Image 1 (cartoon, one colour):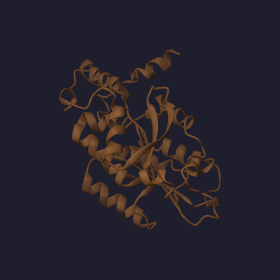
Image 2 (tube, one colour):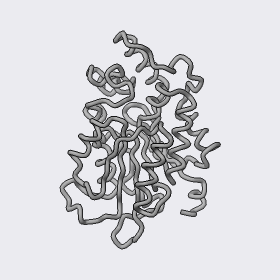
Image 3 (cartoon, rainbow, N blue to C red):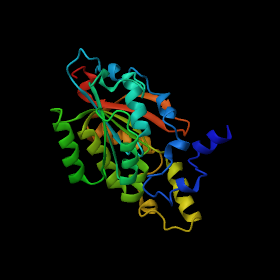
Length: 266
């Protein structure tokens, strides 16, 4: 209970995993204190089928997933196996209908992800700063073109928004959501609540580090998840399809889809 309470308050006791050591959220041991099962326990294994996709070999269409801020790839692999019903020990030739691309701005973390990737034919990792519009579009469009697609079927953006917001400001947060919506038919979003912003800033001050560039001037405050939802619905043509509840860190896990998906036009 004490550990859960600490996590819910966005505190991390390992000094290598504090905002001073990783001001962009690129923690070197992230999954040691937030293991993939914290999210997988909330996400149904039938999610792809629930939103109209299939990864069975009898279906010709390939399903593409994007994991933004993939870190060392642990969650990417867990999400891939969870949604396809496979284990890391299974034969990779079983099915090639599901492909996942993981991106992160930290090249060292991407190297670790590549080195431990159990499904290199299905899962790819590339270094990419998602806040750079031109680079993002070029690399994501290149990957999608390999499969004759212009958008990913599902994008996961989990615990990334705060770091973009703190380091690049209000406009960058909204631009991130807009960019992800433009590249995906469905978006699985976990936005850190405002208390996590305060905690991250407090820990920087405690370490004697310079504050985040935009923390004191941010106008988007309070219920960050609700503000993200409003932007996705009003400006990005998306609509909330389902809430999977909250993680042990007290963060809502929400599924959005293009409005046409609500009418069954998948």
